[in-house]
Image (tube, rainbow, N blue to C red; front, side):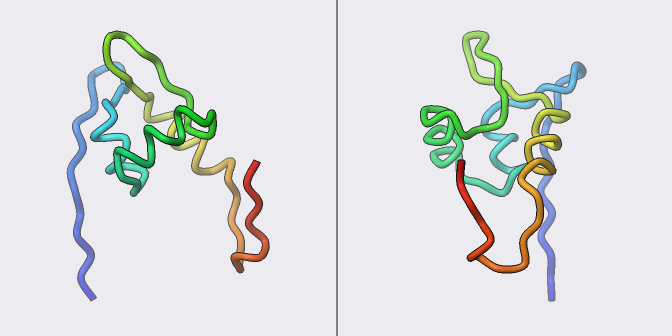
Length: 76
């Protein structure tokens, strides 16, 4: 088994752009954009471009919880 690792670029203040946030979360950029419009994405800021803070991405991932089957998964 081979695991591919990808590098992400993080700004000194802990921000990442949409491309790097998508890589970090394992999502496509389009999925992340659709989640933003539906209000289901991690917290973000818009300063000309969309940025996410790594700590917010980690909190969002951990808040989802862990499930053992797809029948336990519920969307908000």
